[in-house]
Image (cartoon, rainbow, N blue to C red):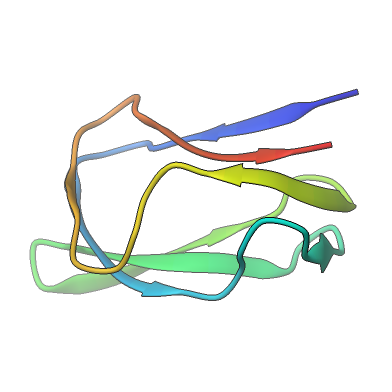
Length: 71
């Protein structure tokens, strides 16, 4: 079953930790956003393989935007 990670808030992507093809564990940090000068980490809600990454370091992103797909 595929899992989509959508952004909870707008901001900028500060650091990516995964790329397509990477295996991830539940709770593993996927990327960090900078929101109002605070670091906001995003973690994998389930174990799987990263199918697609729709954001990159330095991107300015919006709330609700699809960030990562895990299968």
